[in-house]
Image (cartoon, rainbow, N blue to C red; front, side, top):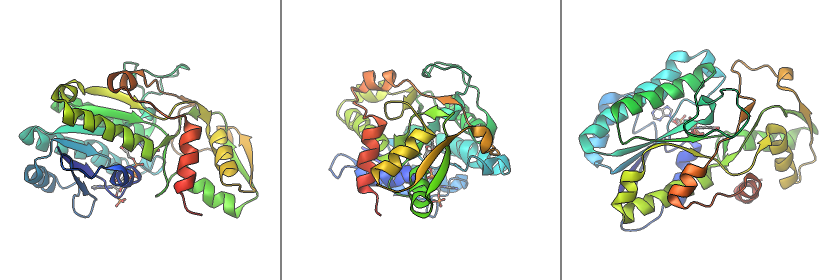
Length: 291
Ligand SMILES: NC(=O)c1ccc[n+]([C@@H]2O[C@H](COP(=O)([O-])OP(=O)(O)OC[C@H]3O[C@@H](n4cnc5c(N)ncnc54)[C@H](OP(=O)(O)O)[C@@H]3O)[C@@H](O)[C@H]2O)c1
């Protein structure tokens, strides 16, 4: 199985590089922006036709949630238009696209875990642009796979964990919001789940055919950003006191969902996945994080 990964230098791209298996039946091709610029349709088409991958994992995205409010065009170019370029190219090669998306598309006001079939109501430019990418892929590619994930963090690149570790080393007190709840997802756990599914597809083509549609994936459990921050400080023994505050104390250009927990039954049942609790995943990730 030949696999093309876009956005190779992003946090998920780097985690996939770490867990991608070295074996004869899986051939991985990782490309970052410098050698696969997704805004260049011709380049995308050339690369896909040249590699003829069975699977394309699109981890590249415009992920600056607040900045997107000022840069709508840029967000849509990468989160929607580039998905169209990939989907068009994949039509020529029959490649299966795994498009990463976000829990932020749900935000419909419910307070029970979101199912893939629940109504979406994206708020803000980033969430709208990610939903537009989903819609574009669904329209072009009947065999699409969309994996919605949430609160992604990992041992490298810019993310909440890295911000907390930096601030926890610089400050003795920190205020973090406690009225937004969701589930952190470690990039390593998400990558391992993707690899496990690809291995099943590699061994059994019927699995690949059945792998289609929208799937939620996060770690297990529920917490607020405050809980997550406290767990990080404790895990690294940082002498920084975290204080819970309401979101209203920290107005941001883009609004975030107050409730953003996803139900993972579909992906767990279909592929027999065991998903770790977010605290266990964090402990593992902290061991892999320097400092
Ligand atoms: N981060 C989260 O909390 C979160 C939550 C839910 C869902 N997601 C979704 O999960 C996926 C992975 O997110 P992530 O956190 O790994 O993102 P990330 O760390 O921001 O990485 C995105 C990558 O896309 C690359 N990129 C930017 N413009 C590009 C272009 N024109 N062509 C090719 N690549 C380009 C970036 O390149 P540079 O390195 O050059 O900037 C970066 O390496 C995304 O679909 C995201 O929407 C993320």
